Length: 183
Image (cartoon, rainbow, N blue to C red; front, side):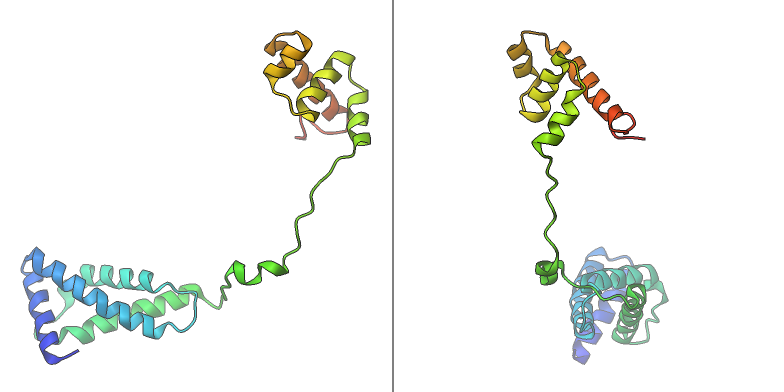
């Protein structure tokens, strides 16, 4: 950055402090690019998002712009704020190491699919009265809808829901679960 750039940024910040919104927007736009480059050069490992540091720096500059001594160069002041925000980001990260899950995905065990045998299903349905057993089997085992089950057995959808609810509650109670598995 040249002395001409320093002078231009100082002029823009002076105008911004005096109330010139266009000058302030131009100042922020220019320093965002400078801070972004500075931060990206300093972050060699992951774990700290450069854009977060840039935004925190811009916010700090906005809040503390009145502390800049107008007879002093503006760039050292900006870089000092950026450096402190970068240090804060590294401190927040701590000693954690972040790894992209895709890099180690092949090392994870495949989830085991829980299967229920036909014997287990029949054992669960055995204690139900025949009408309930038919409804529970149609909806829960065969995967039929309430409407399809009602048509199949010639009963109302409400009767199917009641029978299904009572049948599942009886199965849950029989196998030591509280109301539908909640104890």
